[in-house]
Image (cartoon, rainbow, N blue to C red; front, side, top):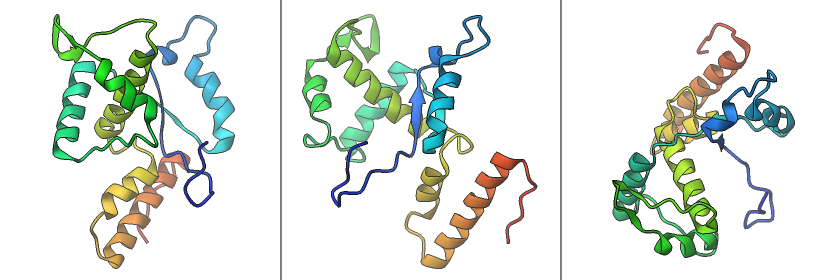
Length: 167
């Protein structure tokens, strides 16, 4: 993990793996399942990434154009270098040309899948920390606390299958 500005470790809110990682290759295990066993002790939960390339690039273009998404050179230097090297795919108008084996291609694909997966994830699949941040944005302290409590109770109920009570 990368240390934050104050020297503390950053908290990872979401981890995504490509859909192929969830395939069972005949031995009764998936790559995602095996990986999940190794990372859950660190509080990480893996989610299947969305792989709609055209929809993802259209979303990212709109977010960059509106200023909703900003990419900083000091925290994402590889991405800042990779984006200008990408070309439109003439066969798929909303997509960029896939270049297997090109490091820059992997960099922009990872960015695409992460952003698109977080933005399009259903409320149930988003990590509780993200749901809390979205639900409490611009609320007064009392309303924010009530939303926080509802989401925490829901998250615990999802994990334990215990009937939810909002008290």
